[in-house]
Length: 188
Image 1 (cartoon, rainbow, N blue to C red):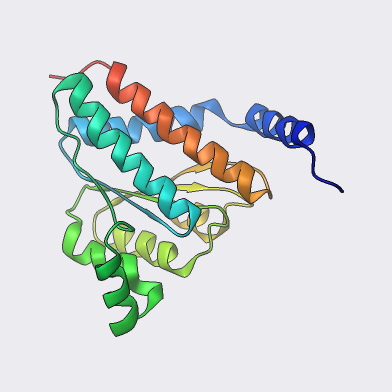
Image 2 (image 1 turned 45 degrees about the horizontal axis):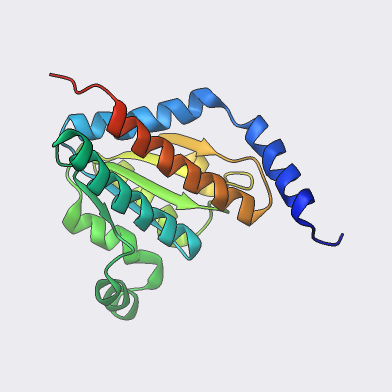
């Protein structure tokens, strides 16, 4: 089938219509609750998903503080290239995120993994580590959800086999969180 802009947009609209609003709202509330409870939100992903994860933290850290004057304790594990390559070289690429969590994550922190396929070994191991060490886990995934949808305590799943559509909607999720953080009420 030949690509066309209208066909892509039609597919994107169709997938949007299949999203479960309740699971989106639950995922947003997990991040908002972590922020309000002053817990860390730690995110990671690979490729485009790494950049989406980085964008999440950029928006959430900056905008939540500007809007509410309340710090957002967010970090993206994909942002330190030196640390990533050190772990990849000295241990394994599959462990680049789990090894960072050993140093970064406290019990009760929220670990958000972003993956189109849900099967990247490094995000799978991050979920396994967080689950085993008192973290709260949220998988933002596509395709059939892969391993992380099954392993994570919570998931936001985009039911599409089109990576770009998955990435589009994962990105939208980040903006939904940001809008909520900026407009939501602060708990006492």
